[in-house]
Amino acid sequence: MNPLRTIVEVLIVSAVAIAVPSCRSRSNESSNQKSEEQTSQNVPPPNIPHAPRTIQRETVWNATWFTLSGDMKRGGNVGTESFPSTFDFEWGEGPVHDSYSDYIGFSADAVVYAPRSGLFEFTVGSDDGMKLTVDNNLAIDNQWDGGGSRTTKTCKVQLSKGIHYLNLLYYDRSGGASASFDCDHELLTWTETSE
Ligand SMILES: [Ca+2]
Image (cartoon, rainbow, N blue to C red; front, side):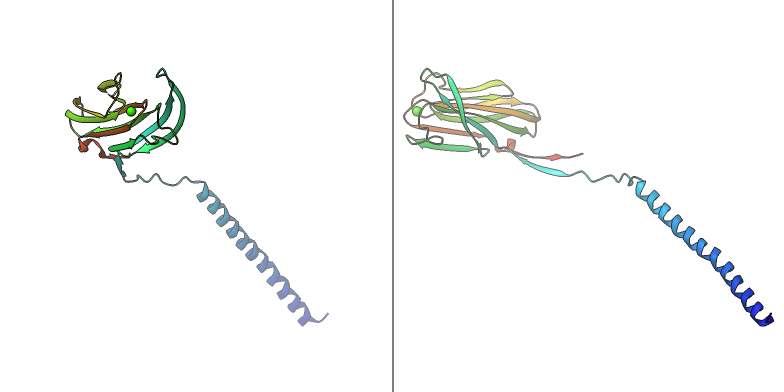
């Protein structure tokens, strides 16, 4: 046996023996890193409080148009429309909504905000008739049972500070047609803060 060859073989075996645990060790490190990454993905994010947002609000009317029968009963709905916070529509004898010039009406809802408690003024005008309710209480009856030429009526309503709900009911039987709404403008814009 060549003694030099034996020494070389022993050195090679030793080198392999040393290298193997070294590889295993790296493999374990990689596995541990992966495990830590998986764990961190399962941890819920910290609950960071967000700043409150301020939202600007403005009154808008959401109206539903309906037809009227000859004996003034409410018929079917024939469309929806948004009106600005205050409006003054003068339709004359032409179409009031779509192709309807006569026996037509709408019911419209809106929200207002009273910045303080107190009396606030509302004005409605109509040909033929219109009713204004505030928080389901009748505030103005403008020639609802009469009709005829355009008439305007104003009243003051006591409101507590905060949100209030308005409804306008309008109809035109025949001839000229118009509808208007106005009120203290401080009711028409406000800000809300989200939590
Ligand atoms: Ca009329």
